[in-house]
Image (cartoon, rainbow, N blue to C red):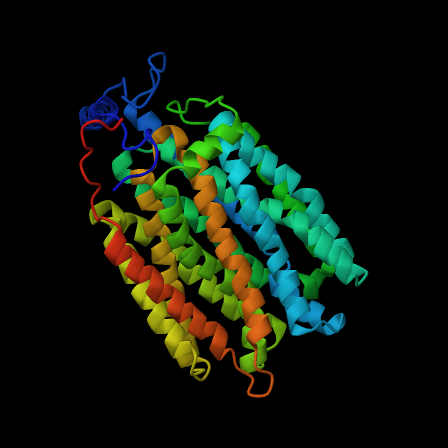
Length: 447
């Protein structure tokens, strides 16, 4: 399978060198000695020290992701409140929910490339600090009841959603290839921020008020940036790529793996983002729960997807990621089909949507484990940025489609859910027929 770029597959010497590099690391761990292979030559840290450092940095990265995902998802849990207070139509409410998703998606392309250049620590700080003002501005716009200002500031709220393009290359640099599925899966648990937002944001608004709730999240972002400054470090294995951003993006865009993984991730992560943001509206409309109760059920959906993500990554470390992704698409199609028939609350609807969340979560972990295996090391940030952007874009359109196709007479979302079934089946067919479970050997004459 041709990738359309001379930078992939990597050279034989590069692959062998990395394998030897990590073999020395594993031998060092078994012996309990110093001189871990995964450090610069001037670094004399022992293998246990490296394990502790990378564990701390992965935990910090996951925390940063969770707080920024919470900030990114501040509007979704309050969408039904805004719709009622501002007399918004279904389409207007959907646009309000979708706007931060769009910016968070497109911004990941640039942020991923900047991470290749400046490192994860600097970019974690930059994204967290840059998200503080939009969070406060959205709270202000909501408190004065201005729909145009909510849209405007919601646009900039999308900055927080770019955090994902920072964490994937950051985690990859800290872990050996055989454990990158695990590492990216753990980092992906930062998606729990959507669950935290869905559960706590409506409650905080009820307890403290709208603007104070946004102030709390702004303070959390500031504290997070300080923690990164004091405690976080880039991996010793990280080497800044000082090439200009645009050529790096062009190089990544020439790789077939970039667009193959982008399509798959747009389905699984896009599905997660779409439901995490639109499910409060869906539940309130179909099952007539309050905003707080709808938020609690949405939080359950998000937690299930978050917990499933590292499972998908770990499975992809043990079996070819292709089969993990295929299982995800099959399960997603099946559960979306069941949802069309509006299973009664709470047991059967919970079973349906929790199962849907599990399949989507496994898929997100499986796809990015696949990216870690296939993307060239020097371009992992750029490839990650494009793939992550595709995932965000996959979450942008479904809320708009759900709002536009909602049948107010019969009170159902049959068309929107049927489109999800069709999309998941198309992704299943593409993965099964076009993608290899194992990378084919490089032919002579390719570089």
